[in-house]
Amino acid sequence: MIKEFRSEDYLKDYFENWISVYKEGAIREVTLAKYLMSLHWIQSIVPELRLCDVSRVSYQQIINEYALEHERQTTMDFHHQLKGAVLDAVDEGLIPRDPTRKVIIKGKTPSEKKIKYLNQFQLHELLNSLKLGDEVNWDWFILLVAKTGMRFSEALAITPSDFDFAHQTVSVSKTWNYKAGGGFSPTKNKSSVRKIQIDWRLVMQFASLVKDLPPEKPIFVTKEKVYNSTINDILERYCRRLEIPVISVHGLRHTHASILLFAGVSLPSVARRLGHASMTTTQKTYLHIIQELDNQDIDLVMRSLSNLM
Image 1 (cartoon, rainbow, N blue to C red):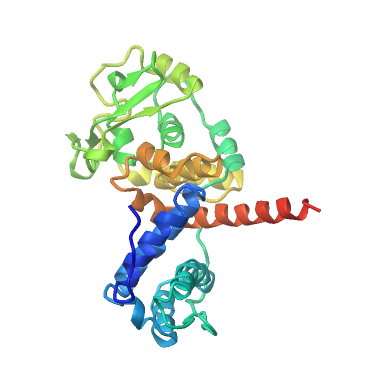
Image 2: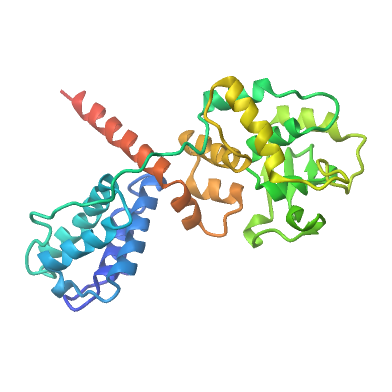
């Protein structure tokens, strides 16, 4: 059903409808995620701003407020997305005149970016250097997290019975309460209970590794207390030896998601695989990748258009 807007309606509602009508199904999911994130900010910054009250001053104030939390380039992207909807509202007579004219784009000073994930080639180097013998060790743990994107506590709680080698899946239904001395605990949220598809190589490796282990006991937990720092130290030594960015175990989870997104896996699929309660969490966490993919889309469009003559 087509919604007719009046000048007294809220900007946030118009923007939400505009995204639904003009963007959903017309752009990639990773790009749509950026528009939805911009909508979230409009709902937060000006929840009661009416279309008839959108002026150059109010629009500049929106941009200024957004810029307090974002770098200049990110603010520019936000402005371009919002501007598309605002100019359509101007054309429809809902906003008196173009409020985006001569807007000044501000933003936080770019901070030094700390690399939290590896690229595909660096991960390949890391995994190839692991010492994967016949006995369970933390190198096997690193491999499992890198290939599934599990959280640290989820991977600790994995038992041999959680693997379904015939269907190439591993079930996440619990965590290991390593901070309180051990024992199984519920997952972070309901969405964290999931089956993760695994590749045939990991199936063969773990089928051999766990065949003689107790089915219901955690694979990686011994009587000793488990510390996150133990595995992080092992990872750091590998990264320094290979001269690749130093990451943590949680960085392996980021690496897993990043590689999937760059490979073209949809945002909802990545969110389900990671066990996120909301796709918004995935959008916020990997906004930098979504933006990079969007820039790649722009480059592809420009190359395609340049070849038309």
